[in-house]
Image (cartoon, rainbow, N blue to C red; front, side, top):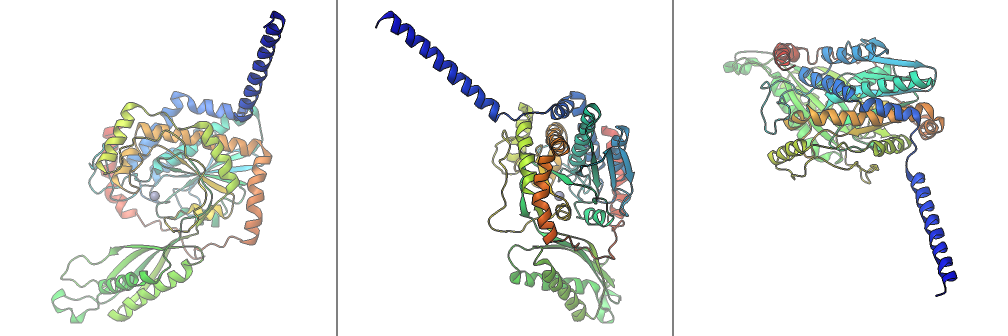
Length: 513
Ligand SMILES: [Zn+2]
């Protein structure tokens, strides 16, 4: 080869290399999500160790309060005070519920809502980060669904958004909806009835999980939460011919509903507890009550509920007692997650990424998985791809967020912290909703929520996508609550239970914190 042509080839090689490198870097800039200065600020603010610690401690404190629905006096106060101290305007005791609050910051449009919950579940007390069943206080409530982390993450996200509003001066409002009693699906239909969501353009919901992800479409079941009360006649248990047992009526109603199961569409769910059934076998109970959760699709729940009421009537008729009360505590719709919202949230979830877990956290996760006889896979390392609606409707759980999805475009960010395989509403979840993984998980959730709120507040074209999807559907299907107009929030529901447990829980809480 001649020297001149060799030189030409070297030049050509260098030129092509530069071209390829240039194209590659162009491609990379194209695929890398562009982070606006507003978004960078909320992510940086939430990354500060003192911020992670502050909200981690709030979450642990609410975990230790373990307050049941509509009794979350200390939990809601802690969150409302935190928001107020950060400059939010806080309205408390809303929609007939002393533990409901709304915290707002900013002015004008758009208005973006972040939902938050803080109630615990009965009977599942457990020591934090202990991978075997060891109650903190035998029989007491515990946070087995991660609600201690949820309004905490919502508050952290909203306060981060406020920092960006203060620095860059963009318009709009951010609101935190402190929503009591989600475990009993109570607050949202009442909050909607009180008009609290009237001005919001979109809502960001969140839930604690082992995953980091979101989804859209119709999901979960509608639910009616109802207490049936029977009245009979009492007598000595050994001369019961004088009596008409209200407990017998409950038993016959339950037998009838259990036979009914076979004739319900398979996606239904139905469960009950007897809340009053007498106090001694030798006094025939003249009063008994059974509390039902009746779940089915929006289309089928009305008919199913009527059939359950007929079972109650049958119990009364067969026993010569009276069906003295049918008290609907709550009634909620299925969820309809907004696709455009979920797509936007997913981008921010991917931007934030799964937290890095320490060796100790992986060891704890594997020990808990072993105790539950689950695959010992440890904590997850990747965020979940966007979840599409299932091809077949299989029913399942319910949430009062369902009603919110029908009045504003909404999707749920599920943030990590719980151990994969931990069982919901169970001591194993209480164990992992406390301490380091919960702190990291709620912080990641707060980042994804704050980043999404920034997108919705600063990019009108993003909010328009949500509204364009939501509005035609809402116009065709105007929101009709399942909750009867005369229903009132059942403020007495957990009063006795919390009266019993609160002094002991407070003592433990003082010892530990
Ligand atoms: Zn739950």
